[in-house]
Length: 100
Image: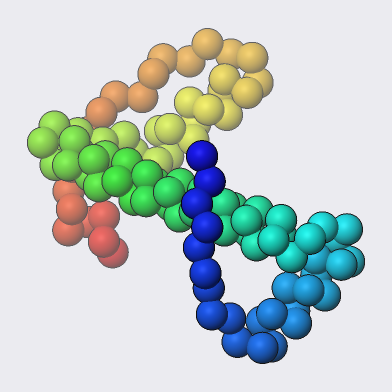
């Protein structure tokens, strides 16, 4: 389903849209729809990213467990070299130390 919507565009933006559309081999309408869809997809992805981060922080605060960066790096480096290292051991979260 599609709906007709009107937008009042500044003349300079309308000219830019026409120019870019012509260079892209698209109609101005197609370019605007594609651009709006891309912007909305990006915004939704950014919102999901922030929500995931907030949830991860809440989970960390609840469990009070994190992994030391140097332990994780060592683990990943050994895995990348084909070794089978032991998984890092979680440590207590120290928010004051993490902000330094």
